[in-house]
Structures are given as structure tokens and as C-alpha cells.
Image (tube, rainbow, N blue to C red):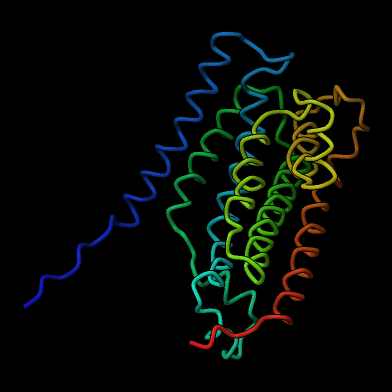
Length: 248
């Protein structure tokens, strides 16, 4: 009798592994601020807020949105035959529980920010935090949808999507004010990461924008994430209409 195939790591181990791997980034940020104290006037507690928000957004989107990679595997036809909304099928197709390790780590950093940064958690700021997380999840989910959409025409799209997804996470964990002007515009008008993290974060902190934007912008800017997701699904529907079956 043939031996059973080797079993992969359990879900619990994957969650712990993800928690520890992402924790290395936190250690690196802590080492930076322990050495220099602040970066252009930003303290570690304030940066921890941006970090926690962005990683919470990405962890939730990454757990739900990886099903859109199915087009590269050749199994997309089976989903088209099922009498269920296609987008919901894809989001439920590959739910990655291991990403909750990143989520737990992000929530821990948010807890650290709550006790070290000058912020006041009121019902309004709590609602704003939930709103910006929802907008950020929509933004990162939109990026993953666009990655799947590109696969209608080419399967060599993963690296491009990772530039905006993983690269966006790395950029969003710091205040936009520390970046060059062209890069801030990219993360505001092309991939609106600043709208779902930086401006709401300023409103939660009660801090004026060093770049001179109005204080109320952070209360409405997360809507840009939902707009980005809507445009991504519009592109997705175009791809579905032009999809040709793999024939297997």
C-alpha cells in the first residue's frame, strides 16, 4: 500500500508563522525609532497607527481576494457553470486563514499605538477607523481583482500586482509626508492608498497635515477605496465578457 502523501503545516502553524514573519518588520521599525527617536517629526506611536491600519486592511483583503488567481490555473470554467454570483464564488474559493497571523500582529500594533500615540478613541474616531479599514480592504481587493483581470490576456501578471499590493503595504506603513511629491501623487490619484490610510490616520490622531490638506479630508477620503474597487470590477466584467474557455 502506498504511503499517504505528506501533510502540510496545520492552519494554526501557518497563522503563527505569518505572525512571526510580519513581526520582523515591527522589530525593524522599532530599531529605526530607537536609534533616531523620530523621522521628520513623526514618533513611533504615530507610525504604529499607520502600520496597524494598513496591515489590517491588507490581511483581510489578502484572505478574501486570492481566489481571483484561479484564472491562471485553468479551473475558471467550472465556476461559470454554477448558479451563484461569480465574484462571491471567487472570494470564497481560496480563503487563506494563515493571513490572520498578519491580522493579529496588526491589531497588536494598533493596541500599542493606542497607548503611545496622542489620540483619543471616541465613537467618532472608532467609526472612522472602521470606515478607513473597510475602504482599505476594498482598495487592496481591487488590486487583486485587477491582477485576476490581467490574466484574461496574460498570465505573467503576478509581479506587477505585487508592486502595488505588497509595495503599497510597505509604503503605507509610513506617513505620506515623508515621501517625494511624485510618489505621494501616485499613492493618492493612481492607487489611492493615502486616501484610505494617511488622511484618516491624521484625523484619528487629531494632527494637522504637514502637506497642508484640509482637516476634514480624512473623514471622506476612504470612499476612494470603494471607487477603486468599483472600477476594478468594471474591468473584470469586461474580461469575463471576452473570456475564451480553456477547453479542458
